[in-house]
Image 1 (tube, helix red, strand yellow):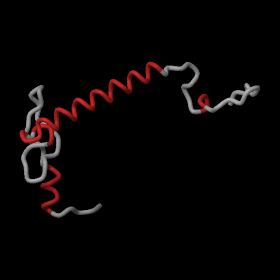
Image 2 (tube, helix red, strand yellow):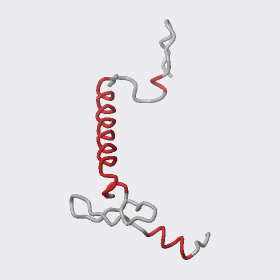
Image 3 (cartoon, one colour):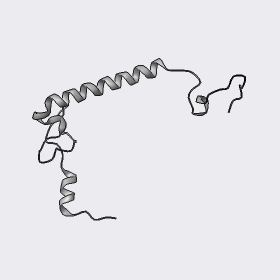
Image 4 (cartoon, one colour):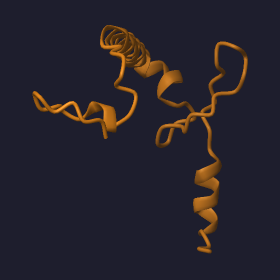
Length: 91
């Protein structure tokens, strides 16, 4: 087991000084030389809001694609193999 220098152990325990909307402490790592993490840094409010917006769009897109391409019989890798015309052999 590797032994970390004393300074490294302190860095590993640092957490964002912000509080989440539910009142719980934020567990995000703080920015370098700053007590706040990315989501709670007042200078990065606009960037954090944009990151949340993009994350929400990506999540919605993934769920829409999953519903649109919900094809029966494609539950396993073996089922997804390309079938040759005239070859109905199941693996």
